[in-house]
Image (cartoon, rainbow, N blue to C red):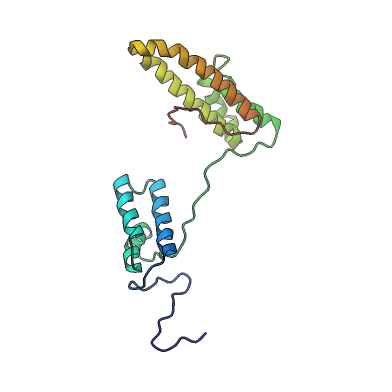
Length: 198
């Protein structure tokens, strides 16, 4: 196709559009996706995220969008490029019964008196070769560490003294549910858990 004299041709793939060119809704949405991805990666704090999000959503020209992309990727950034958003991490589906048993043990060892050491050992041993076992062991370990912290801190208050037995019963039930979930190829997330171990 031959370009007509005096009529600007649209930028090709990988080319930075002229700054005066008006943006479309799709252009704004692409930059918003980049900003959201950068925020999820920890590259912006909340105030910076809100400010850049507002700038992207109210942009009228590519000249308004380019500074945002330049902050993220340097002067060669192209606002039209869609970010590569990775899928949320999910436990790998186990290939055999041994993996399911190992993942289940990470939860159920707490029931048999090894609340922290059990999932920790599984994470450091079988977890090195099985992402499925590791994901369940890490979740169980974080829950047990949170439970340990609550057991130490809650008795400092009268209400906490009353709550501790209730929490331990709930923890027993949740550990059993986590073990069953691991046996049936499922992911499991404990509620109210501080996830210190990644």
